Image 1 (cartoon, one colour):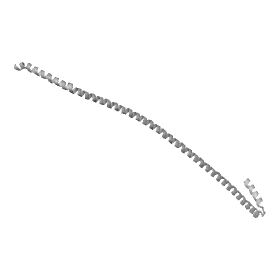
Image 2 (image 1 turned 30 degrees about the horizontal axis):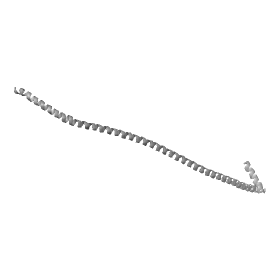
Image 3 (image 1 turned 120 degrees about the vertical axis):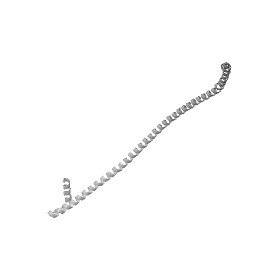
Image 4 (image 1 turned 90 degrees about the vertical axis):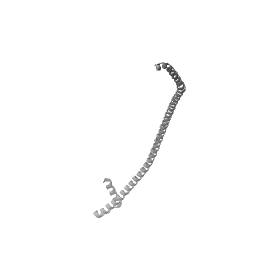
Length: 164
């Protein structure tokens, strides 16, 4: 068979061209493209690592800023609470002083009113004595037909009021 006889000649030339093509592909792809792809992958990995490092640094910075903010916030809150307590204390002291002065005024008015009431009571008692003395004088004159002086009538009224 002639195909089998030609096989060695065809096979050797096909093997030659196969080695040439594989060699070409090896040098073009293996030596030319793969290093470029590997460099790109390396750059990408380096970029990712750098981005992760930057993100971690930003996170750490944000955490520090947040902690500083919380400390300032707590300090501000304490200062505000101190101001509120101080204002409450001032208001309480002011209220107590106003109440004390108002109480002093009320006590003075009360003492004045009591003195006025006592004076009115004494005046009323004196007026009652006068009216009673005149009435006693008039009654003894009309009923017993006895003339009594104002002084006697007054002393009798005073005795009756003390015993009554």
